[in-house]
Image (cartoon, rainbow, N blue to C red; front, side):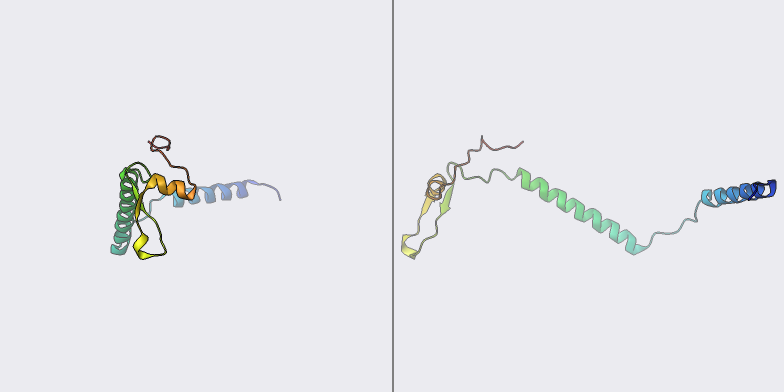
Length: 105
């Protein structure tokens, strides 16, 4: 097919029309009430998640350390007692985690 002047002119006109149509701004429409509620709900859920994560990180050390006690499971109700966390860790063979050994802020 030969690229003659009429075909080039037609291609130029079609390209110009396409750019005008694509460049024309769309008509502004009002935002639906359900869309507003959805956006507000997502924002509130995001705030709740962020607040939960901040509180969880500030809450403090949860490791077994000095002064913490553990309830040990027992077979008889009369022989149950509270023992220090270090002793409970030694009974099960778990290392005692010192708060200085943990990685954190």
